[in-house]
Image (tube, rainbow, N blue to C red; front, side, top):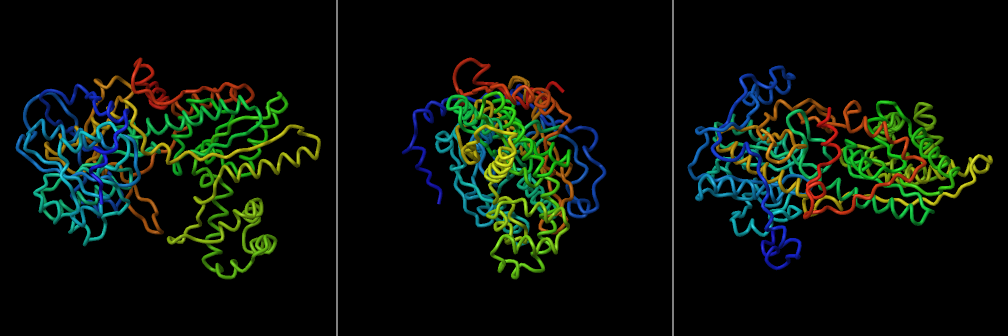
Length: 556
C-alpha cells in the first residue's frame, strides 16, 4: 500500500526547497510544436524472430519535434504511468513533466499511476496523480510516489489484463519508466495492443543508473548523472582518508554488472591509483590472476615510493568478463548439472579440487583451485534459473584475499617489504534514491514532457530519445526512437529472446581514451580529486556540471 501522506508529514528542509525548483525545458518543447517523422524507417533489416514477434511495430521512423501547429490532440485524455525495475534518481520528475504537459494541453486531462510496478496494471491497482499529490514529490529522489516492481508483462493472460485495465480507464496511453528490460516489455505491450486493435499507446522512458541504455539517439539514461556523482563523492572521500591515514588500501566495488560506465565515470572524477574496466579486461582476455598481478604491481610500486596505501576501483560485474572465470563457470555449470548432489558431499577443499581436476579442463580446474575456500563453496550451487551465483561473490573481498597471498609470497622471496592493510567497500544502493542533481531533475522533467507529446501525437512503441545532452538544456533535442530498432536476440534463461542490447563502455570513445592516457600518472602519485557532494545551488559550473562521460563523448 502506497503511503501518500509521506510527503505532507515528513518533508526535510532540502525537500521543501527542492519542491520549488522549476526544471528547465529544451526550446524544442516550448511554444507550438508538432511531430516530425523522418522520411525513412530507422531500421529495415530485422532478425527473423523480431519479424515474427513484432509484425505491427516494425519499420518505424525516428520522431522529432518541430515548431508549428497541428497533429497533437488538445482534447482531454487519460494517461497511465508506471515505474518498472530498480530505482533511479529523478523518476518523480518524469511524472511531474508528464502531468504538467498533459494539463498544459488540456486542464481536464488525467494522469493515473499504477502501484508497485507493472503488476499494478494487471491488478488495476492505481491512484490518481493530482497536481497536489505530485507537487510534494517534485525534484525528490526515490520511486515512493507510486512504488515500483520487477514483474514482466509477457504472458497472454497478463497482457489481456493490462488491456482491460487501461481500456476501463479510457486511457489514451501508458508511459513505462524503466531500463532496457522494461522498455523491451513496453514494446511487447505495444505490439499486443496493436494486434488486438486497441488504441492504447505505449511509450518508454530510459532509466538506469548503470548507464547502459544509450545509443546514437539516447545520450544517457536518467539517474546515471546523480548516482555517479554520489559514488564519486563517497569514493573521493575514501581517497582523502587514504591519503590522510596513509595505512590502508581501499578496494571500492561500484554498481554495474553488465557495463562499467559508473566505474569509468568515478575514475574520471577522482583519479584512483588503479581502476579495472570490465570491457577492457574482456577485450584483452585478462585472467583473474592477471588482474591480481596488476593490483600487486601497483602496491609494490607505491611501497617502493614509501606509500603503503591507495585506492583500487572495480566494477560489480568484473568476474563475468574475465576469460578464465567464464570458462570455469561454463564447465562448472555443466558438472553441477550432472553431479551436484555428489559434489555437495565433498566438504574438504582438497577433495573438491581433486574432483574438478578429474572433470574440468586443466585451465578451468586451476582457476577454481586459485579461489579462496569460501568462494569455492559459494559456487557449488545454482540459483532458481540454474545459473552459478557469481553475482554473490564480493569481488573486492576476493581480490583483497588473493592480493594478500601474492604479497606474502613476494615478501618471503625478499621482493616486497611494505605493509598491506586492505579495506573493502561496495557502493550501490547509496546512489539509487538520492535527490536528483539539477541535470537529472531537468532531464527527467523533459522526458516526462516529451512522453506526453508523443502520446498526444498518436505514436506507440517508442522510447523517448534525447540528444545533445552535454549542451545547455535549451539546446537538448528530444524525440522518440522505435523500440524495435534497438532490439537484438540474446539468450535469456536458455532461450533466444528479443531484448534491448546493453551498451557497454566503448574502448574507442573519448571517456575511455582519456582515462587510458592519464591513468599511468595516477599510480604512484596521489593525484586524487575530491568532487564533494552534489550541489543544487551556486555557480553553474558546479551545480549544473555534466558527467565527464557526457563531456568527453561530446568531443568525439
